[in-house]
Image (cartoon, rainbow, N blue to C red; front, side, top):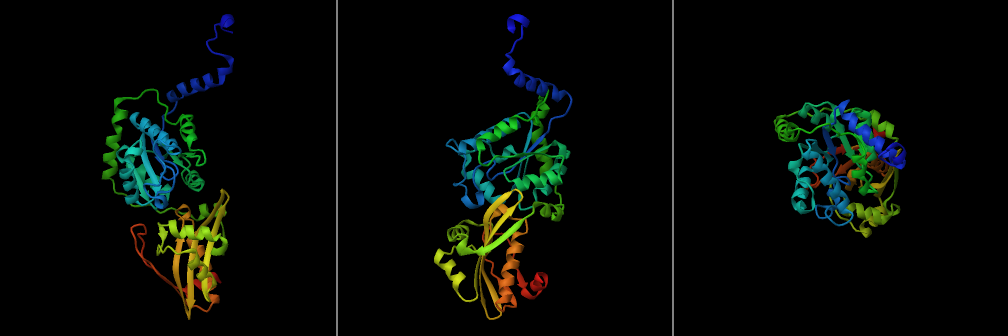
Amino acid sequence: MFLASRLPISSTSFGAYAGGLVRSFSPLLRAPRKVLCTDLDNTLWGGVLGEEGPEGIATGTAFPGNCYLEYQRYLKQLSSRGILLAIVSKNNDADVREAFQVRAADLGLTLDTFVATKISWNEKATSIRELAEELSLGLDSFVFVDDNPVECEAIRQQLPEVAVVAAPIDEPWRLVELLSAQPFFDAAVVTDDDINRLNEYKAQAQRAELANSASNRDEFLASLEIVCTFLSALEAPLARSVQLLAKTNQFNLTTRRHSAAEVEEFASVAGGQAIAVRVRDRFGDAGVVGLALARTQGDTCSIDSLLLSCRVIGRGIETALLAYLGQNAIRAGATRLVGEFIPTKKTPLAPTSISITALSKTLR
């Protein structure tokens, strides 16, 4: 073909060549996106920071940490071209800052690389709206990367202008390939102003103080088709119940680390409850993600432990678990449901007293 027509490439390369041509011309017709918002757990690094701790997350030069290190280096490359990076994560801010400090040698970027950090337990759609207002950018300038299909679907439904990339949690080595195959950040030219834009936006974000905008979650939660299955903690199986007690920190009202024998005692004693909850929705089965231990004596049901994996916080699972526990307590003759709260740095919550009478009206 070269001798016949001076064709410079093989016919087997036409697809790649055509794709390259399209990406070369497309920046002339549309503006590139300007902000990449990344999740942290199982996206920027492997594992869940709140459960594994800074030393337990996967990053660095050894597999599988090097998969995440490659993604971090890709983000840093984007930043060097003027693309703004932001963290949008449901986490404790102090824990994240500790992780960046403790694992600095294993991370390909620092917190200073990010124009803003939205690290809280707010809904991510709310955080992205706040960020767009802080940066004075339209939502169509944003790309959102997260491993959680529920969070990805929430952004697709609530912020359709935002481009969403689902990080492949089971194949973390593919994330950079998936992102680089998209034309989100292609630009005809990168100027000095583009490169220096980071400091300008950082200053703007630091000056801005914006109130959190409440987001209506009812329609979204209904679309997930969430199903909660309650079972004995002994059948969860028991080993999973004990693991939840040992590892769950963020939503754990007492952080008591009960043994298998102690869980069995709650399940077998008169008036005792040891309840596990399994959660699934239209995206898949999350498994056993919550646990409640309680005991009824007289007219009072006392909750010893109430905990939920951070993976499902914000979906109403804790309300369903509490209601189920309350139903059992009513049948056991209780008129009051009392929860104990032991504050820790992982649980910045406030103690609550709940009357089972009001709860029973809802249950009926």
